[in-house]
Amino acid sequence: MASDAPPLPRHLQVEVTGACNLRCRMCLVRYAPAVGRAEGALSYEQFLELVDALPALQRLTLQGLGEPLLSPHLLDMVRHAAARGVHVGFNTNGTLLSPARARALVQAGAAHVHVSLDGARAATYEDVRHGVAATPRPGQFARVVANLRGLVAARRDAGSATPYIALVFVAMRRNVEELPELVDLAADVGVDEIWVQNLSHVFSDTDAAGRYAAMRRYAADEALFADERAAGRALEVFAAARARAGELGVHLRLPRLEERETDRGPCSWPWEGAYVTHRGEVQPCCMVMGSDRATLGRLQDDAFDAIWHGEAYRRFRRGLLDGSPPEVCAGCSVYRGVF
Image 1: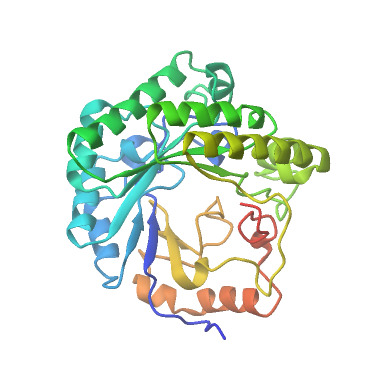
Image 2 (image 1 turned 120 degrees about the vertical axis):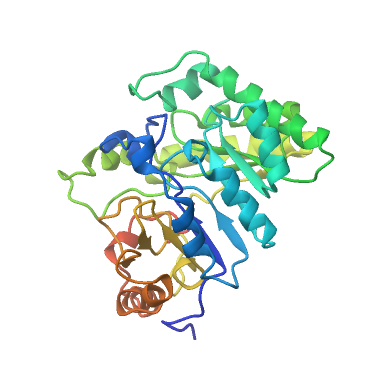
C-alpha cells in the first residue's frame, strides 16, 4: 500500500518565472493580475538550493504559468541539470524561440522542448493565444511555426538526438476540428510527436461567483469531455487524426474523453513529484492552477524535505488513499482520467 510519507521525489516541476508574454484563453494568467518579468523570476540561487537538495532527482520540468523563455536564468538551469544527468526540459509558447535560443538550448543539453500550437490555421491559433492586451496577434502563428522549424534545424545541425520536440495541442470545441491538419503540419515541420490534451481543470471546486468564475465558464463552454455531443464529435476527429498520423509516421498522443475510476484516481503526483512556484510555494502537482488552492508549504518557511514529509502533504496523500480526496482534485483532468 502506498505510504503517506514516500521518499523524496524523482520528478520536480519548477515555475522558473510567473511572467508571460501571452494571455491565452484557457490559462489562469489571462484572468489574474499581471506579473512583471523581474518580479516573476525565480533566482538562480533559489533554483540551486531547491534542486541540489534532491540527490535522486531524475526529471526536471522548468515551467509553470509563466513563459520559461522569459527567465534570465533558463539556460543556466538547463546546463546545471543536464550536467547532473537529469532529464530537463520545458513547454514554451514558442514566440521567443529564436534561432539563437534554439541553438543555445541544444548546446545546453535540453532533453525536451514542447511547443504549444492550438490550431493548424493562423486564425484559430491566434484566437486562442492572445498577446498581453488579451487580443489576437496577427502573424504570431507563422512566427511560432518558423521558430519550430528553427529548433528542428538546430538539433539537426548539431547532430544531436535531443531535445525531443513535441507539439502540445489543447483540444477544445473551438479548435478540435483542425487536429488532422495539425498532423500534416507536424510531419512537414519534422517534430517528434503531437501531444493532445484536454483542459487541465474545470474549477468545479471553486465558488461559481468567485475569482475563478471566468475559468469555470470557459471550461464549461470548451471542455470536450463536459458535453456528450462534443465528445462524440471529438472522437470522430481523433480517429481521423490517428489514421493520418499512421500514414505520415507521426507519433500522436490522444486523451481519453470518458472518466476513469480507480481507488485514488490515476494520480501519482503527490508520491512521485512536486510543483514549486516562482514564489516558493510547494504544491502537490502542476494541475492545481492557483497558489491559494493547495499550497502545502513555502520554501521561505521550511526546507523542501520538511514540507514533503510534513503533515499537510501527508494529509493530502491520505485523502487520495482513503477515498476522500481534497476538493481541488474534483475538477482535475488527471484525477478524473481525462487529461
